[in-house]
Amino acid sequence: MAEKFGQMLLAIVVLVAVVGVLLFLASLARGKRGDVVRSLFFVGPTIVLVAVGLVWPTILTIVQSLRGASGSGALSFTNFATIFTRDDLRQSIGNTAIWVLLVPLLAIAIGLLYAIIVDRTPIEAFAKTLIFLPMAISMVGASVIWKFVYEYKPTLAPQIGLLNQVLKSLGFETQQFLVNGPWNNLFLIIVMIWIQAGFAMTVLSAAIKAIPDEIIEAAKIDGASGWSLFRFITLPSIRSTLVMVLTTIAIAALKVFDIVRTMTGGNFGTSVVANDFYSASFTQNQPGLGSALAVLLFVLVSPIIIYNVKQLREAY
Amino acid sequence: MSAMVPVVEAGGRAPELSSGARRRRGNGAATRTTSSPLATVVAILIATVWTVPTIGLLITSFRPQRDISTSGWWTVFANPDFTLDNYAQALSGSGSSSMLDFFVNSLVITIPSTLFPLAIAALAAYGFAWLQFPGRQWLFVAVFALQIVPLQVTLVPLMQMYGAIGIDGTYWTVWISHTIFGLPLAVFMMFNSIRELPPALIEAATIDGANPVQVFLRIVLPLATPAIASYGIFQFLWTWNDLLVSMVFLGGSARVAPLTVYISQLSGSRGSAWYLLSAGAFISMVIPVVVFLVMQRYFVRGLTAGAVK
Image (cartoon, rainbow over all chains, first blue to last red; front, side, top):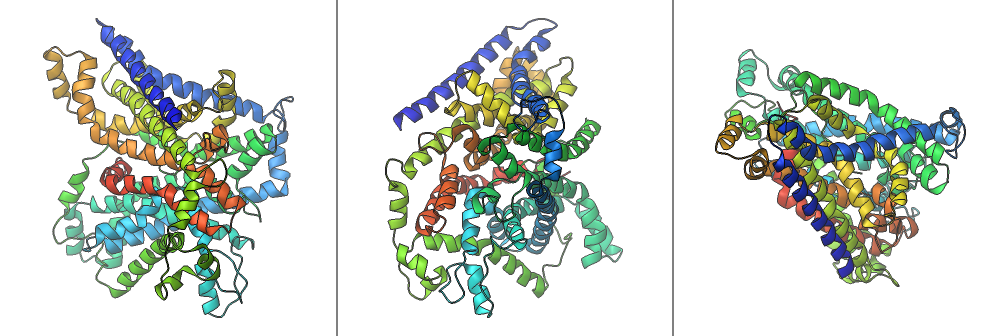
C-alpha cells in the first residue's frame, strides 16, 4: 500500500517538475515574438498529448478497421460487411438506436417536468439533490442498485426484488426482467435514464431561471398562462439549452458500456455496439472487427461534432 | 464512462451564473404550475422512484446475510435487525485480495488523473485566451472538437503504444489516458472563464512589470480557481467512476484495478451474493457521493456553464 501511494506521490512530483520547467522556459521568452515562443510551452503540451493520444490512435484504428477481422490483412470493407450481416451485431446496432432514442427523450422529459414542478418550492434544493445524486454514483454502482430492484424469484417464493414484489402483490407472475427479451433492453435503459435525468433537470432548471422576468411579465399581461406560457415562452427560451442536453445525453447513450456489461454482460439480446467493441477487441481476439465497431461509433457521433463545431465557430 | 460532457452552447462563454437568478425574483414565474395538487403528486412520485432503489440496497447492506435471501428489505420496518458483518466481510475479502486493495487503487488512480489534466489544461486555456500566436483559433476549435472522439477509437492503439514504451499494466497507463481524454473538455471549460477576465487587469499587471508567466500565476490562476475547481470535481467523479479505461489498461487484479472493476466482477461472478454486493457498492460510492454533496455548488456551476445564455 505504501508503495502504491509512493508511486502516486512520484507522479505528482513529476507533474510539478514538468509544469515548473515549462513555466521557467516560457518566462525566458523575450521580444516581439515572445508570445509565439511562450505559447509553445503553454499550449504545446496539450496539443502534443491530444495529437498523440487522440488523433493518431483514431487514424490507426480507422486503418485497422479496414484490414480484416484480425486487423492485419489487406485493405477491404470486410469488417463493416460483417457488422451489417451478422445477426447478433445487427441486433446490437438496433439496441443502440433504441438507447440513443429513448434515453435522451425520457431523461429530458422527466428532468424538465421535475424542474418546473419543484421550481421555487421551499424544498427545491433538497428535491433537486435527490434526483441529481445518481450522477455521482458510477454506472457500475447504479447497475448493482437496479439489479437488486429487478431481482427474480419464482412467484411462490418470498421476493427480495422490489419490482417483483409489486407484481406479486398485484396478483401477477414474477418476471425475469433482465432475461426476457426484448423488454430487458428497456429495463437496462431505465438505469441510464435514472442517471441522466438529474443532469437534464439541473441544466434545464438553470436555463429556465435565466429567462428574464420582463419577458414573462409581458407574456402574462398579454394573457398567457400555464401551458401556453410554457409552450410559447419557456420552451423557445431554453431551446438552445435543450439541444445541448439532448446532444450530450445522446452521445453518452451511444457509448454506453458499463450498464450492459455489469447487468447482463450483453447476453439475452441486450448487447450494444460499445459492448461488442469491447468483446471483439479484448476477449474474442478480433481487433479488426473491434476497430470497425469503434469507427462505427465515431461515424455516428460525427454529425454531432460537426454541428457543435459550427456553433462554436459562429460564436467566436 | 460517465456522461458529463457539456457540449458547447452557441455563445460559448460562461455566463455570470448568479445573474439569471438575480434577474428573476419577483412574482413572475416562468412556469407556475406548482400550485396544482397533481403536480405535487407527480413530484413526490418521481422523487420516490429516484430514491427508493438506493435506499433499498443501502438497507440491504446492513441486514444479516440469511435475512437478505429470505425476505425483502422492506420487511425491516416490521422487524429490524441490522449488522455490520457485510461491510466487514466485503472489506476483509477472501484469500489474498481484499476490497481495501481496490479502494487504495481507486484513490491512487484518481488523484493524479485529476491533477494532471487540471494543470496541463490551465496552461493551455491561458495560452489560447491571452497569447497571440498563428493558428490559435483553429487549434482551439480542433481541441474542442476532439471532445467527442469516442474513447473506444483510441484504446487499442494506446495500449500498443504503452506496450512499446514499457509502461503497460502500470498506473501510468490510466493516468496518461485519463489526462488525454479529459483535456478537450478541461481546456474548453477553463478557457471560457479565463477569457472572461477583464483585459484591464492583465494590462495593469503588465505595466507594473509582470511578464506573462507571472500574470498567469498571480492573476489568472487565482481568479480562475472556481472554474478549475468545478472541472476538478468533474474529472474526479469521472475517473473514480470509470470502468472501461481501467478494464482495458489495468485488467482485473487487486494489484492495480479500481473498485468499479471489482464490483463489476463481483456482480458477474456472484450475482446473488447480495450481502457482498450491496456493501461493496456502497463502499465504492462513499467518496464520490461525499465529494458530490460537499462540492455540489461548484459541480452545478460547471454543468451549467455555457448552457445558459
